[in-house]
Length: 230
Image (cartoon, rainbow, N blue to C red; front, side, top):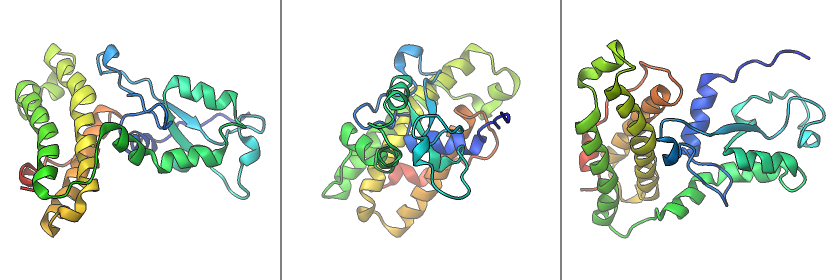
């Protein structure tokens, strides 16, 4: 059997980003960076919808033609329990069902978290401001000055505390803020839509660094986000 290649970091990042840190099975949606593990370790498993081999779960659903089992489109991010469930019962969880989970994941997660479209900008602003305020308080308390602690002493206690809060609080808050803004883009101005695009890139950079271990490609938090919907 040919040796499997490692799944590319870019694919892993996209999976974590689009899952927003939660299991993609709609009746689960558990956090993949559990608080009980300190928020600095994840339990996520990249499950294949169609396996590499000819005898694995859902192998009969393999599409015709060229097919890459490790492509983003064939992977879904699950907690260990849900991964076991879908592979033990492939007839109950065919590829079409898993694709539907993935497609509707953000809407399912938003519904669970109470994210909705508001009637006016003030209500949308209040929803976003609440999570932004918590992130700013953590940033002011734990973020290393100019990032120096990452450069010179990544094993320091302060660095570990910062990484833990980034994974367990800041990134989940960013995902929640993004979902709220997406649900209310109809209330946003053109300039705010541009700011939101920059904000999304900022969050991708944070996820690259703190989830996938890839540094140097993020952009700064856009200051205009502090006044979005105001």
